[in-house]
Image (cartoon, rainbow, N blue to C red; front, side, top):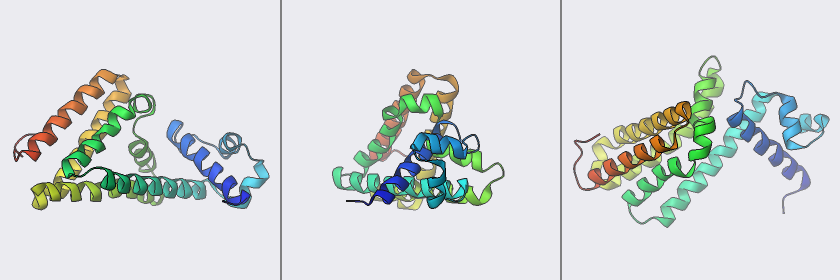
Length: 196
């Protein structure tokens, strides 16, 4: 069982992770994190000296969760096309949060990319994990020569869908575009790679 100090640190990281998604990194204060985590302000400095350190821990937390999720998908879904469909299910499964806050990875990278390059490089690794995993799926599907290109296309389309669904707060648009992506994946699985 984790020690109390480890549980407290984890509570801080999870609270910060939610706030960074809901409010944005730059709009979240140290006080916001303290209040959301329910720890005395003096205690937080035992774990983190700066907000940047909290962000680094939150990115690590997200990275670990993504790695566990992808490993689970590899074990639960037999074929690459099933795994690719599971990936795009993120859109419909997270529709409410996407419409309210956008994509957690996309919004964080966009925010940090406007003057906080060192932090953004760490956040970029979240995308790189998906890029690598998706490339593996497309390669296994028979597109080894174009696997990375297809992975980036799928991620770009997902980001576009997330952004426009957020801007317009339109679940119908999100679901329709997700179905378009689903049909594109099925066509790829059938060997038709001329469609976008």
